[in-house]
Length: 184
Length: 191
Image (cartoon, rainbow over all chains, first blue to last red; front, side, top):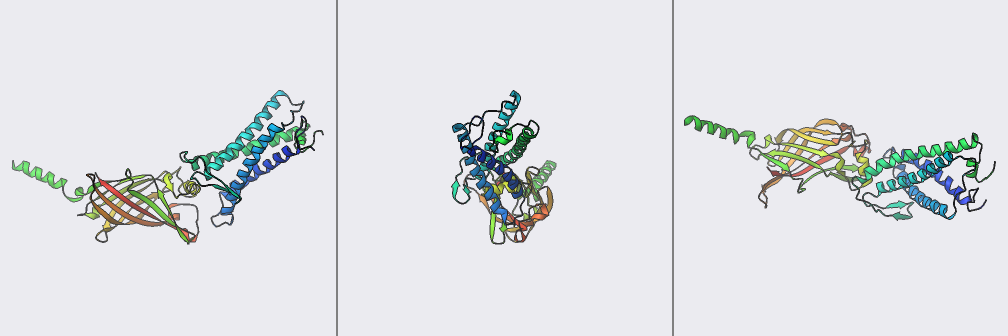
C-alpha cells in the first residue's frame, strides 16, 4: 500500500486518518455524554473533561491535516458503478461530516474559553482563548455543541450504514477501499 | 371653615403618620451600589463566592418605625457569575438553578422585627428554582443620609442560609456543601 492516494485506491495516510477520526468521533460522543453526569466526587470529574478538551483540540489538528492531505493527494475517483445520485449524496454527506465536525470542535472550544481561559492540551501546551464576547457565549455554544454532537453521530452512523449497504447489498468495493483494498 | 380645617388636618395625619411615613427606596442597580452574592463551601476546604449580576428591587424603611420595613427583590438567575464560564454554564443548567425553566428568583418580605439598634430579622418568601419557602434575612443598616448629588440613600446588608435540597437543587456537592449563604448588600435611593 502506498502513502498517497491514487485514482482508484486510498493510500495509507488517508486510511489511518479516516479510522482515527471515526474512533475519536464516537469515543468523544460517549465521553461527552458520560462526563456531564459524573458525580462531583468521582475521580474522573476533572480528568474526563480535560481529556475531552485535549482530544478535541488534537482532533482539530488531525482534521486540518486531513483537509491539507486532500489537497496534496486527492481521494480516489468514485466507483464507475455509482450513479449520479449516489455520487452527489456521498459527496454531500462527506462535506457535511467535515463541516459538522469543524463546527462541533469550534463550539466546544468557545464553551471552555468563554471567560478568556486557555485550554490545556494533555498538559503539554495551552491553546489560548480568542472570541470571548459573544452574548451568553458558554450557554449558546453549549447548546450548539450538544445538538451538533447528536447530529454528527447520527450522520456518521448513516455514513457507516451506507458503507455497509455498498458492501453487502451492492457488493462493491466502497468499504474495502477504506480498508486498503481496491478489488473484492 | 372648621370642617375644612379638620379635613385638612385629617388628611395631613393620614399622609404623614404610620407606615405611610416610611420612605420608599429603589435599589441602586443603575450605579451598581448593590450586590447579591452567595458563598458555599468547596469540599469543606474553602469558600466559593458567586454573584447575581442582574436584579432589581425596592424597599421601604423608616427609622422611626423600622418594624414596618419591607423589601422586594427580583433576581435574573441566568446572570449568575462565579468567574468561571464552564461552572456558570453548569450552575444555569437543571443540575442547579434551571434558569431556562425558572429565570427569576424573588424575595418578598412578610414581616420585619428589630433585633438591635441597627439590625432586624426580615422574614419573607424566597422563590428559587420554582420553590417558595420562608427564610429569615438577618439584616443590618449600614448607613443612611444625603448623598453628594442631591439624593438620599440608605444601605443594608443581610444574609440568610438555606439547604440546596430545600429548593430542589439536584446536584449534590458533598457533605460540606449542603448549605449556601445568600447575602444582599444593597443601597437604595429614596424615591
